[in-house]
Image: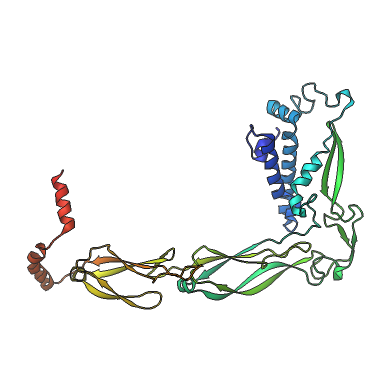
Amino acid sequence: MAQDYYKVLGVEKTASADEIKSAYRRLAKKYHPDVYATASAEEKANAETKFKEIQHAYDVLSDPQKRAAFDQFGSEDGPTGGGGFGGFNPFQGGQGFNTQGFGDIFGDIFSAFAGGGGARSRTSARQGDDIEVGLQLDFKEACFGVEKEITYTRVENCPSCKGTGAKNGTAFKVCTKCGGKGRVVVQQRTMLGVMQTERVCDMCGGSGKIITDACPDCKGKGRVRKQRTIKVKIPAGIDNNQMLTMQNEGNAGVNGGPNGNLVIIFKVKPHPLFVRQGNDLNMELPISVTQAILGDTVEIPTLTGSVKIEIPEGTQDGAVIRVKNRGVKNLRRDSYGDLYVRVTIDVPKNLGSRQRKQLEELKEILDKGRYDKIEKYRKKLKEL
């Protein structure tokens, strides 16, 4: 049973020709063999298989007659699975169907990789891949900034052969099959005419050159993996899961292309008291019942030292007190967030008999005080 070519390209059956072309371009770029030049053998094989499926699906759906046959019979070969399109003869009248135009769209798809002209080649300069690393910071390190050393492994051009894979960087010759281009044009005659496609040169593997004597240090690969340590200045105010990009510190480019970037993803340890929300800090302050009733002056910690705050008389549980400019520095300008102190009233437990007696003596006095919440509750009860 033939594949569902619409699913292969990720489009609906009602997709227009432009939508099909756009989907093909996107997928072909993603799975093109050149993208997997430095990948493992398994990844290369999987990408090559996927690329062929995408190419064949586009070949069918971009041709009105093949697409009509597929929509009607589930196969581009028609109802007989290879016996033609219900009696249609593509060579009727002596005119075959030439798909030479396919080479134009193929070149258009990969022109971006070649700097604006022609199909992408392994001989063209390409930027190296980015590298992502995680870096854990203490809470205060993130708030105040810090300098850290980061050690990671990246791909570099072999210094012995300058990335060519050839001994001393000179032991190679131009491929005679592709003339150094890395790609060859292949023509194939089918029932629909002459199919012309551009493929990676099988003699040089797309490099455009034949190595006559491999570099002993990189075994002809032209690239080596090396450990690298760099110092990074982390700005004050960095937050959890934010990223910092170090330009050109990633994997080496190909054929003279620039290095990729190093992307540092920060993980900030939690603080025992403070919870960060943007540039503001939140904390809970437990106080006693008497402090809540009578009010008090309390010393609290901040990122930059202790400060004293006033607990107003009659403070309610859950009240929030704002302490200005005691939060975290803004990452992009010289300003600070605030510290928000949420008051929680801690009710005593396990009172002794003497303490209970004293409280009972005070109960009559306390009951004569004003209780706003209790009054509101009683009014609502009366409305029931």
